[in-house]
Each structure stands twice: as C-alpha cells, then as structure tokens.
Image (cartoon, rainbow, N blue to C red; front, side, top):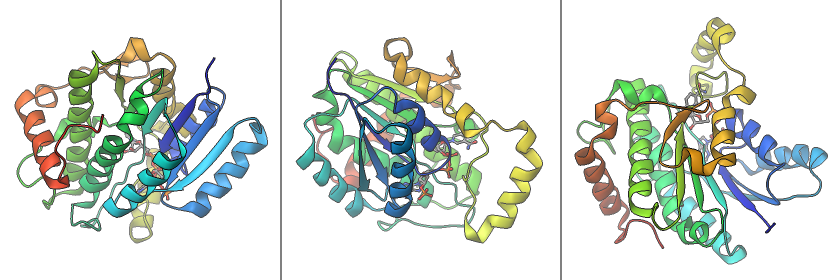
Length: 282
Ligand SMILES: NC(=O)c1ccc[n+]([C@@H]2O[C@H](COP(=O)([O-])OP(=O)(O)OC[C@H]3O[C@@H](n4cnc5c(N)ncnc54)[C@H](OP(=O)(O)O)[C@@H]3O)[C@@H](O)[C@H]2O)c1
C-alpha cells in the first residue's frame, strides 16, 4: 500500500482531536493544521505515545486569516506531493459580533471562506493522490436559515450566522461533487450530532457555555462518538461520496439546502471575494 497522508483542521480540540486519534491507525502521515501551535505540539506528543510509527507535521493555519492560510499552503506545497484526504473540521461559534482579519463575519469567514480557500489551494495535491478525498464537517444548524443578503459580512442572530456558514459548507460539498466526481474526487459532508466540546465556549461567554453544556451534557455525545461520522466517511469513501451523512445514514437536505441557484451564486461570489479565476486550483 502507498504512503498515505491525511490533513485535518481543528484537531486541537473536540471532534477533530478524537478523529485524528482514531485515524492515526489508517495513515502514515498526519498534517495538523492548527491556529495554536503550542496546543498542536502537545497533541502531537500525545499521539506519538500510541503511534510512534507515523509522521506528524504541525502547520500553523488560522482559518480566520487569508494571509495565514496562504502561508500555510505555501509550506505544504513545498513539502508534499500529494494529500490523500483533507478533513475540513475546524469550526467556530461566536455569540458576539466578530469579524475576521479580512472583514468577513467571523463564522462565515472561518467555517466556510477559510476552508474554501484552503481547499482551493490544496486541491491539486488532493487530486494528485490515489484516494482523492475531502470530508467536510457541517451541521444541521444549516436547516434553520437561508443565506439571505450580505452573507459574507452581515450581522444577525449568532445561531443564524452559524447556520449560514454551515449551509455554505453544504453548498461547497455539492459543487465539489458536481464538478469533480467524474475526475475521481470523493467528497462527503457530515453532521457529527450534538457533541459536548469546546464549541462556543470563549472567555467572554464561558459562563453561558458552561451552563448550557452543564444542563445538556447527559443528552450530548462525547467527542469520540461525535467523530464517528467523519471516520465512517473517510473509511468508506465510495459509499458516502456526494452525500450529507450522520452516523452512516443519509441526512435528507431541506429544499433550501439543495438550491442550485443559491449554490451557484454563493460559489460565484466566493470566487469574486477571493479574487480566484477558477473553481479549485487543479
Ligand atoms: N459540537 C457539536 O455539537 C457540533 C455539532 C455540529 C457540528 N459541529 C462542527 O464540528 C466541528 C468541530 O467542532 P467541535 O465541536 O469539536 O468544537 P471545538 O472543540 O471548539 O473544536 C474546534 C476546533 O476548531 C479550531 N478552530 C477554531 N477557530 C479556528 C481558526 N480560526 N483557525 C483554525 N482552527 C480553528 C479550534 O482550535 P483551538 O483548539 O485553537 O480552539 C479547535 O481545534 C466544527 O466544524 C463544528 O461546527 C459541532
């Protein structure tokens, strides 16, 4: 079997961390794309205790900064010839209004735009592998909102803004599948379920986060359980290609989640915002 390389965002906490731990059995090399290198190093040490036979590379990548993404991509392109599987897992929930370095609304800018740009630049490495796989960690929070107006910079209710960013990731999955399935790409979006993690727990809303998670913990999955959908998608790429899946079952998308018009408009506008001339750098 050939040397297999996994790249994953957001593996310093929660679902991503549990995913990387399990998938360390399946890959020869893991690229951890992290915004906090110190946390990345600690996690690497932990992973090496059980998997001293794999290579782990930590690359700084703050998805809320286009400059940081472009720098990390240059580092990866200089070191790697292929990436077998990219998992776009990182995510942020911000209860107060925040913007990224490039003035995008924080959740749209990180969860969707940051991952879009990362995927765009890593695309030729992914297509250069035998596996040719992308897994996108989305969320059923998409169901409660449409994209609406000014979706890159707009204001609004935090949960609507989070839902919009996740709806955009679902459109992104469908566009990738439509354009590259014939070229051999396997792309899947997953919903991990309601999982007790650090999502939404920031210093300014720590109390609120602790209260909500405290009350709901008995109903929440553990991070290990939350990682299950991603792991299934990675391990059975043919079965789940082009699908939105949770725990091995298709999640049927609401009509607005399948809107051809909204999807095409989103992709066009994203390319324009990012100054890109093609859909993915292939
Ligand atoms: N938890 C749930 O119930 C649930 C439900 C549906 C979907 N999801 C999705 O599951 C994914 C994983 O979330 P989680 O629940 O495991 O949350 P989490 O414990 O907060 O982990 C989020 C990860 O994303 C990273 N991250 C956040 N902002 C980033 C940025 N600007 N640049 C790079 N990395 C960044 C975090 O890095 P740091 O360690 O540095 O903070 C962390 O590693 C997310 O996409 C989330 O939307 C979660």
